Length: 85
Image (cartoon, rainbow, N blue to C red):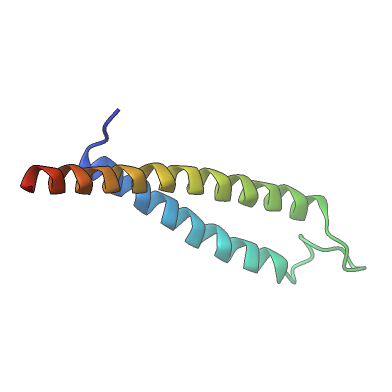
């Protein structure tokens, strides 16, 4: 299956955006001082574990989607290069 140029770039951009957003979220989660992520003893709460799990799943999906987009962009460039030769 061949992806169009706009779809390939969208998928690649989505993968990069996902990493940027979720890295920031995890940093903020780790430094949470509101009492949601860590209890008074400094131990992680259920809120912390649920949101860390969401972040990890989003990292994995963002990576997979970004790789698909990257491969699409690379295939289009190789195809265009072959047509020029």
